[in-house]
Length: 129
Image (cartoon, rainbow, N blue to C red; front, top):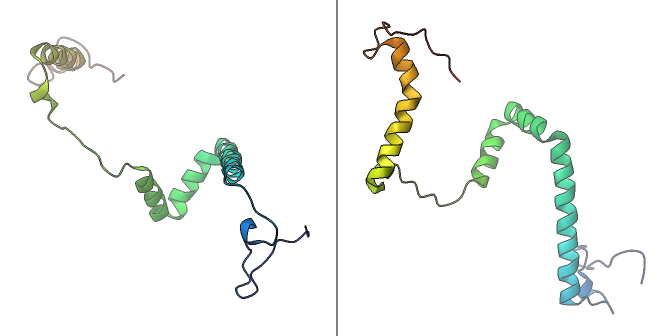
């Protein structure tokens, strides 16, 4: 085996191992190599992300927002099913729970502003949590 990879004489491209004289790689070995390469690549990507991931995102947003949006779009699922009106599918008990939770959330604001929003409630303005 020579130290240099074999090249196609017409195109100058490197030849895969199976096209090289006397060299053939077994499919199982090829899969093992690909798996190992993938693992190493992902480890390197994780390391780079941990070191500069957030900073790289902010730099991309500043320098090329179009590429940032393309990256975000590529990460989104192709098909999304959204049921915006889940209330129609809720049981009576689920509806009551939702109403009680909403009531607990807005009650401090209503008490602070007065039920009509005129600002004549019985407490000082509630702070946002």
